[in-house]
Image 1 (cartoon, rainbow, N blue to C red):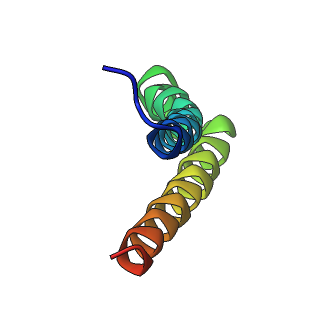
Image 2 (image 1 turned 30 degrees about the vertical axis):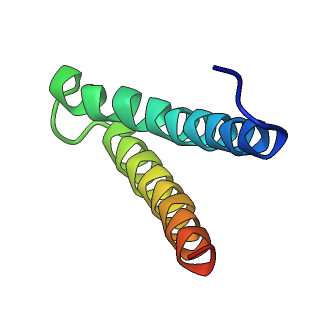
Length: 74
C-alpha cells in the first residue's frame, strides 16, 4: 500500500522528528555511562551532568512542540 501525497509528507515529518529525538538521546546515553567509569570528584562529572541536563531540556522541548502540533491538528 502506497501512502498518499499528504500521507507521505506526514511520514517524512515523523522520520525527521524520530531522527531529532534519537540525535538528542545519543549524548545522554554517553554522558550517563561516564559516572560509572570515573572516580568521584573528577572534572568530567559536572560536564556529563550538564550534557544530560541540556539534552533532556532539548528533548522535552521537541516533545512539547509535537504535543502542541498534535493538539492544533485535532
